[in-house]
Image (cartoon, rainbow, N blue to C red; front, side):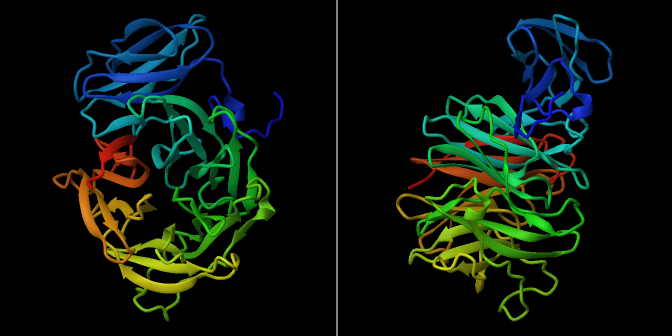
Length: 442
């Protein structure tokens, strides 16, 4: 095999286990069916499926590389594999049928180890509407103490009704999709707390450049390094801004920063990026809590008066607000306040509409069973608009609709949820990324 420095793979496989057999790259189970896609050589394939552990395999012949398995039993576990004309079979994948909340983009059974080299659960969704109207959705694969370095990319050509596999991106974690200078970009890290990376695509995500390293991080999950989430890329004062942090959960501390670049400079040149000096939380900041590791997953926001804020997840009904100096993009963030905020205990997203209204999407306490939308005109007073997803009747230990991302599309909000539903491992270790279309009340 030849050496390679590319970022996109269809699919990515560890170098010592690259195979030619079919590879199931997408599962989307429903109440009594399951849609699946695969890669492989040729056009004629045989699907074999059975209730898990029964050994009673059924077969379906098909052409192409996607199929809808129907007439399945509700609430049943299945295993499925795909065989090509030469008799080469994929590894068996697992799924559980059940009624969905939203449209399943991709599903990963909590005991399915196909992506074990990265993790076992789906998280960190990012969504983008391209200029041609198509939608892209990315997600990564995580598990505590695993490498956590694989991102999966999917596309919809019909406004989110149906989704299809595009490619794998490796190494990439916590990736954020954005469109800039006529190109598709992805900003992420190489692994949990790893190197801060950026790459681009000129064909809607089908193929990718080699990534550029913006900032080196850690090679170990237990050490401090780059931490972020797929939060908003803000355009303000002639620059692009986004939140990032440095630290780790194991060491229980995070320092906050805003990463930025002049909108006319090349994002693929590392030296063009600027970071505000990382600032650690101080006991002198009014309203901070003893033992709190610091704000994380910050949202870059321009205030009504034109200031640039980093609004970070902090604690229950509290957000930490720091401010950047647009004229000095490497200066330390300045403390503003610990503010009342209804969604502060989990990752939230804030974006401003064309009319100037700020929308915030996140979880209301307790737990993550309710995903709520709030609106504000001034970033201070937040009024509830609606519960986008509400399953408050469910156990907060078992169910979660979390880490939301969204784009505003006219009177609609198009959003993704990191969803733990229908017997996920637990509320945190999610088994699906789901798509939702919400009409915003005027």
